[in-house]
Length: 194
Image (cartoon, rainbow, N blue to C red; front, top):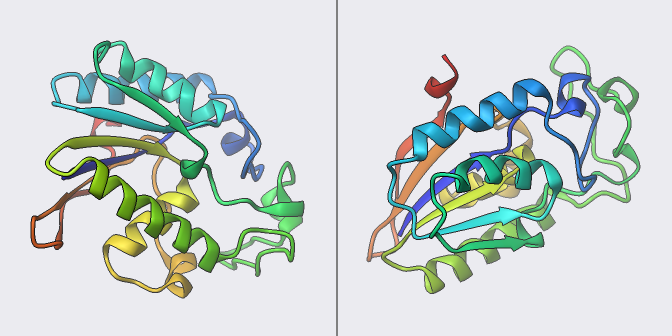
Protein backbone atom coordinates (compact mmCIF):
# COMPACT_ATOMS: atom_id res chain seq x y z
CA UNK A 1 0.00 0.00 0.00
CA UNK A 2 1.16 3.49 -0.84
CA UNK A 3 -0.06 6.01 1.73
CA UNK A 4 -0.06 9.71 0.84
CA UNK A 5 -0.75 11.88 3.89
CA UNK A 6 -1.71 15.52 3.68
CA UNK A 7 -2.60 18.21 6.19
CA UNK A 8 -5.40 20.60 5.21
CA UNK A 9 -4.66 24.14 4.02
CA UNK A 10 -4.24 27.09 6.38
CA UNK A 11 -7.40 28.07 8.24
CA UNK A 12 -8.54 31.39 9.63
CA UNK A 13 -7.88 29.92 13.10
CA UNK A 14 -4.37 28.77 12.14
CA UNK A 15 -3.59 32.30 10.99
CA UNK A 16 -4.69 33.75 14.35
CA UNK A 17 -3.26 31.01 16.62
CA UNK A 18 -6.65 29.64 17.65
CA UNK A 19 -6.85 25.96 18.63
CA UNK A 20 -9.42 24.14 16.47
CA UNK A 21 -9.54 20.46 17.38
CA UNK A 22 -12.99 19.14 16.44
CA UNK A 23 -14.35 22.55 15.39
CA UNK A 24 -15.06 22.65 11.62
CA UNK A 25 -12.63 25.41 10.65
CA UNK A 26 -12.62 27.38 7.42
CA UNK A 27 -9.75 27.83 4.99
CA UNK A 28 -8.21 31.28 4.75
CA UNK A 29 -7.48 32.78 1.33
CA UNK A 30 -3.92 31.49 1.75
CA UNK A 31 -5.32 28.06 2.66
CA UNK A 32 -7.45 27.96 -0.49
CA UNK A 33 -4.38 28.82 -2.58
CA UNK A 34 -2.36 26.11 -0.77
CA UNK A 35 -5.12 23.59 -1.52
CA UNK A 36 -5.09 24.57 -5.20
CA UNK A 37 -1.31 24.15 -5.34
CA UNK A 38 -1.28 20.72 -3.72
CA UNK A 39 -4.12 19.72 -6.05
CA UNK A 40 -1.96 20.63 -9.04
CA UNK A 41 0.98 18.75 -7.56
CA UNK A 42 -1.17 15.60 -7.14
CA UNK A 43 -3.17 15.88 -10.37
CA UNK A 44 -1.16 13.23 -12.22
CA UNK A 45 -0.67 10.98 -9.19
CA UNK A 46 -2.46 7.66 -9.34
CA UNK A 47 -4.84 7.65 -6.36
CA UNK A 48 -7.18 4.72 -5.84
CA UNK A 49 -9.16 6.17 -2.93
CA UNK A 50 -9.29 9.47 -1.04
CA UNK A 51 -9.97 9.24 2.70
CA UNK A 52 -10.81 12.57 4.32
CA UNK A 53 -11.61 13.92 7.77
CA UNK A 54 -15.22 15.06 8.10
CA UNK A 55 -14.20 18.52 9.36
CA UNK A 56 -14.85 21.43 6.98
CA UNK A 57 -11.23 22.54 6.63
CA UNK A 58 -10.20 19.09 5.39
CA UNK A 59 -13.22 18.84 3.08
CA UNK A 60 -12.43 22.27 1.56
CA UNK A 61 -8.89 21.06 0.86
CA UNK A 62 -10.19 17.80 -0.63
CA UNK A 63 -12.54 19.73 -2.92
CA UNK A 64 -9.57 21.21 -4.81
CA UNK A 65 -7.88 17.82 -5.17
CA UNK A 66 -11.06 16.12 -6.32
CA UNK A 67 -11.29 18.56 -9.25
CA UNK A 68 -8.44 16.52 -10.77
CA UNK A 69 -9.63 13.10 -9.54
CA UNK A 70 -13.34 13.10 -10.34
CA UNK A 71 -13.56 9.32 -10.75
CA UNK A 72 -11.62 8.49 -7.57
CA UNK A 73 -13.72 7.07 -4.72
CA UNK A 74 -14.01 9.62 -1.90
CA UNK A 75 -14.75 8.53 1.67
CA UNK A 76 -15.33 10.89 4.59
CA UNK A 77 -14.56 9.60 8.07
CA UNK A 78 -14.54 10.87 11.65
CA UNK A 79 -11.53 8.58 12.25
CA UNK A 80 -9.30 11.20 10.59
CA UNK A 81 -10.49 14.10 12.74
CA UNK A 82 -8.01 16.22 14.60
CA UNK A 83 -7.19 15.31 18.18
CA UNK A 84 -9.92 16.59 20.50
CA UNK A 85 -8.52 19.42 22.63
CA UNK A 86 -11.39 19.78 25.08
CA UNK A 87 -11.68 23.16 26.81
CA UNK A 88 -8.90 24.61 24.64
CA UNK A 89 -10.98 24.42 21.46
CA UNK A 90 -11.78 27.89 20.16
CA UNK A 91 -9.22 29.46 22.51
CA UNK A 92 -5.87 31.01 21.65
CA UNK A 93 -2.59 29.17 22.03
CA UNK A 94 -1.64 31.89 24.52
CA UNK A 95 -4.71 31.11 26.62
CA UNK A 96 -3.69 27.45 26.63
CA UNK A 97 -0.18 28.38 27.83
CA UNK A 98 1.93 27.80 24.70
CA UNK A 99 4.95 30.12 24.54
CA UNK A 100 8.59 30.07 23.49
CA UNK A 101 8.48 26.39 22.53
CA UNK A 102 6.71 25.37 25.76
CA UNK A 103 3.85 22.92 25.20
CA UNK A 104 1.55 22.71 28.23
CA UNK A 105 -0.10 19.43 29.27
CA UNK A 106 -3.44 18.75 27.57
CA UNK A 107 -6.56 19.71 29.52
CA UNK A 108 -8.29 16.92 31.45
CA UNK A 109 -11.21 16.71 29.00
CA UNK A 110 -9.00 16.36 25.89
CA UNK A 111 -8.22 13.22 23.93
CA UNK A 112 -4.95 11.92 25.35
CA UNK A 113 -1.86 11.27 23.24
CA UNK A 114 -2.35 7.57 23.93
CA UNK A 115 -5.96 7.68 22.71
CA UNK A 116 -4.96 9.57 19.57
CA UNK A 117 -2.10 7.12 18.95
CA UNK A 118 -4.42 4.12 19.38
CA UNK A 119 -6.96 5.68 17.01
CA UNK A 120 -4.18 6.17 14.42
CA UNK A 121 -2.97 2.59 14.92
CA UNK A 122 -6.48 1.19 14.41
CA UNK A 123 -6.97 3.39 11.33
CA UNK A 124 -3.70 2.16 9.78
CA UNK A 125 -4.44 -1.49 10.53
CA UNK A 126 -7.91 -1.31 8.99
CA UNK A 127 -6.78 0.76 6.01
CA UNK A 128 -3.85 -1.51 5.17
CA UNK A 129 -6.14 -4.56 5.20
CA UNK A 130 -8.87 -2.93 3.15
CA UNK A 131 -6.61 -1.20 0.62
CA UNK A 132 -3.56 -3.47 0.28
CA UNK A 133 -1.73 -2.87 -3.02
CA UNK A 134 -3.60 0.44 -3.49
CA UNK A 135 -2.59 4.10 -3.35
CA UNK A 136 -4.55 5.96 -0.69
CA UNK A 137 -4.63 9.72 -0.11
CA UNK A 138 -5.38 10.69 3.50
CA UNK A 139 -6.42 14.28 4.29
CA UNK A 140 -6.19 15.02 8.00
CA UNK A 141 -4.90 17.47 10.65
CA UNK A 142 -1.59 18.31 12.33
CA UNK A 143 -1.83 16.46 15.66
CA UNK A 144 -3.51 13.39 14.17
CA UNK A 145 -0.99 13.42 11.30
CA UNK A 146 1.70 13.21 14.01
CA UNK A 147 -0.08 10.24 15.59
CA UNK A 148 -0.22 8.41 12.25
CA UNK A 149 3.48 9.03 11.57
CA UNK A 150 4.35 8.02 15.16
CA UNK A 151 2.68 4.65 14.59
CA UNK A 152 4.34 4.16 11.19
CA UNK A 153 7.80 5.06 12.53
CA UNK A 154 7.32 2.97 15.69
CA UNK A 155 7.56 5.86 18.11
CA UNK A 156 5.55 5.62 21.32
CA UNK A 157 2.64 7.93 22.07
CA UNK A 158 4.74 9.94 24.53
CA UNK A 159 6.94 11.12 21.66
CA UNK A 160 4.08 12.72 19.69
CA UNK A 161 4.25 16.06 21.50
CA UNK A 162 7.91 16.49 20.46
CA UNK A 163 7.36 15.74 16.78
CA UNK A 164 7.61 18.51 14.22
CA UNK A 165 4.56 20.48 13.13
CA UNK A 166 3.20 19.43 9.76
CA UNK A 167 2.95 22.27 7.26
CA UNK A 168 -0.45 23.25 5.94
CA UNK A 169 -0.71 20.97 2.86
CA UNK A 170 2.56 19.32 3.96
CA UNK A 171 2.87 16.06 2.04
CA UNK A 172 4.30 12.74 3.24
CA UNK A 173 4.41 9.45 1.36
CA UNK A 174 4.94 6.02 2.91
CA UNK A 175 4.99 2.59 1.31
CA UNK A 176 3.91 -0.52 3.21
CA UNK A 177 5.64 -3.64 1.88
CA UNK A 178 4.06 -7.08 1.73
CA UNK A 179 6.23 -7.99 4.70
CA UNK A 180 4.63 -5.25 6.83
CA UNK A 181 7.56 -2.81 6.82
CA UNK A 182 6.98 0.90 6.19
CA UNK A 183 9.35 2.92 4.00
CA UNK A 184 9.33 6.73 4.07
CA UNK A 185 9.42 8.11 0.50
CA UNK A 186 8.70 11.79 1.27
CA UNK A 187 8.21 13.67 4.53
CA UNK A 188 6.35 16.93 5.26
CA UNK A 189 7.21 18.33 1.82
CA UNK A 190 5.92 21.75 0.85
CA UNK A 191 7.78 22.40 -2.40
CA UNK A 192 4.43 23.08 -4.10
CA UNK A 193 4.22 26.24 -1.95
CA UNK A 194 7.66 27.59 -2.90
